[in-house]
Image (tube, rainbow, N blue to C red):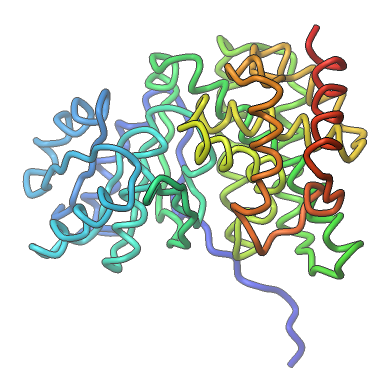
Length: 351
């Protein structure tokens, strides 16, 4: 019988709304995920612990674990604690680093994972990838996607606006990543998954073409949906390829060389604009308009980097993902040539 369709892994429950977190305890207690409410709740600094406390009455058998930092060591520590007792599921409550640690730990212990996002800083909310730091570098680790995702807009509104801007940068960078993927297909015959491209590109365009601001619940919902679609794109592709190209190579290099000049989404925003500029990609004007409208970094100085420092990061970028072909690998510019491109980029956009 011919294959007429394929099955795509997706969360069984997604809730994006004001007050969404109120539906978490009933979901966990109704038997679909945990028959007796024996779940491990991993919380990060900030709002996570207070949210977990509100669930104690309905989930008296739940265990609360503090998670500090988005490192592989932190994830391994959580794994050890999860293995000390039987749990039905892991619930991660917090920002991107907390969710990445909890998601990795849940995957490594074979437990379903429920993501409760307290901000919209990056696309790790529902992706099959955990980005964790180890030995001074960030690595991407394949994990299971969450079985359920909650994004409470009330919590998002109380989180720093900078985190939401970072989420915008991460979603919009999909446009550049897709451009790199299509470039790899043309130049090296790399297979491209059309469904993954559709998810990733649709997410980016939905955010790029909004004209309302961060005070709009409708816009916040679009950002959250864009982050979720990005996760789905990676799940379909089986890798981070549809959402990670030269933009992310540059960001990873910035992390390695300078210890994170900005939030992840801020760095990939600058990386995406530069990579799109190098590729002479038509979407670069729309991308720049979106970043301007929402106050995202656009040039190296916005991240506190000099032209020399940014050039060094761009040159280092390909080494962070040796198996990935992007515009950086395609042009293969030396230091002098790249510095000229960086100078021209800054002159074009720094106004």
